[in-house]
Image (cartoon, rainbow, N blue to C red; front, side, top):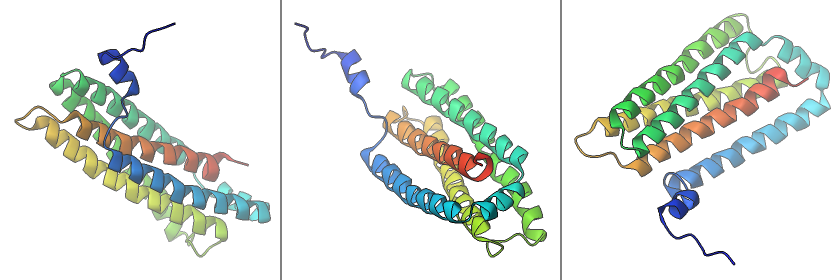
Length: 194
């Protein structure tokens, strides 16, 4: 018979990072995107050729670069959160700053993808594939921009005169990781899946 752990180690294992309100938002967002993903898959199954033709017009290299940018950003968010938990606030500020820079590269790279397509006449009205492409990636881009604002507030709180509130840092990290997970699914669905 083993005794139940009740010390700090047990609390750390049972700790859900961030505020519960952010988790409510994250789960809600994942459900909304999930509906888009299911609808996309349904219509893709109805007209596979049309969707393959649309995919062929996407720049997979740019999509891959954006994927690396977000994955790298999430890595630094995780490292920054760990540093903040350990009381290494200067390290946390630096790591979150790097995460912000990689995250900020995402919308810049996305502009280099959107502008040539739109100027070539490829718009949401071009086909059902591009309607889904622009709606889902545009909605995701809005989430990235909001995530950058949140990361900015996290950095500001770390720089403040008072010790940082770790739950706030974790809440910001939770949102940013959700943005990353959504992009991984979008990249796979829109760019890679054949």
